[in-house]
Image 1 (tube, rainbow, N blue to C red):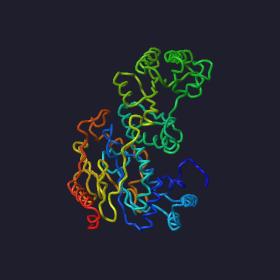
Image 2 (cartoon, rainbow, N blue to C red):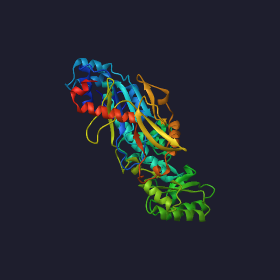
Image 3 (tube, rainbow, N blue to C red):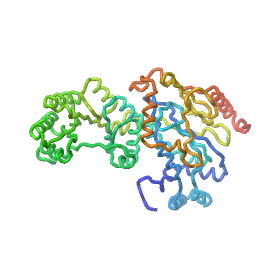
Image 4 (cartoon, rainbow, N blue to C red):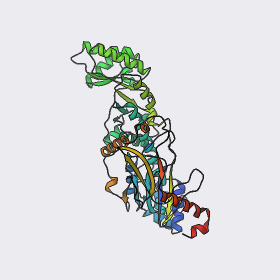
Length: 458
């Protein structure tokens, strides 16, 4: 077996927990093939008022292409835990189920299904690890970026975080999630190529250091890239600004600069001084870009304090989701063979059966959600759509990145203004269960608590 440490379509089937394979063989041996319902949801929002659902496109592509190569089957067989009949099953394994999901970019809340998988139980079980891995991270990244976008207002925001993110896949998927949530551009060239995200970049301190004089570095770079943004804090930030001002005065016919970037120090003070110096020399058109350990709170403080910053490059803290690097996500069985199922564990229970989420909008503002059973028709906009049938993607699951980004913009705009703020809202957004779902939950709980006899009656 060749070793390739990048996840691709040919090895994705092995991107799973080992116990998924042992359960898959157990289902196979017991001839348990009836449809199961699994929900992927987040139990509690932690420090967030809302989440931005993201990652569906990745999941649907994975499900459409899920298969075990000959090398993968041989590897599973080499573990000594699996019989030949099961290995033959893996050789012809495909995902044949249905998927229901909220549209990418939709705000979601605790216990609401983001994705619902309806498939033969072995198929639905096997995909748990990948779905949780991708939806959890991309939703968390999009949510963080939406907060940064909110803080920055209309100012340009660029993703600068790939070098400190947790691996190549994270850096790519985060760049996409950030763009969905409203970030304008990325420094990630591969993300630009794969997703069509606008790319942006300035220069590194090493470029300035490699020249004998800072002014010479600026002159050379601007000569090659007219209208570029120059990094001015390699040595002394205000001296860097003076070098830009001097070049603009002495080389007016050949020196063209579009912006200056501040990457360290007291950004409020330095941006104010930079703006004053630039304006005094007729460089009002030159933009001020700030970067360096920024997050939504720092950006909000800078803007509230009147810092004349036109754009932000946001890296490490957004890229690593530093204040909340994980979500309390779960992928739980809620039905099998036509019977509602649920987990009863304290604080880790889930809602039984197939579901729908209805969002009530009054006066153009979201006023609360109701989690209901799938067959119910109640007031509000239904959020879950069928995006895959029999393992094939449907039109609702085929949207361009620009369409997803626009949906996110409009869906977030419908949330109450204080809910989109950076501080915890009290009371939180209202999410209720329909009366019918509450009854089903209690009936299922009583049946399960009655033990095997209770289950056998259904």
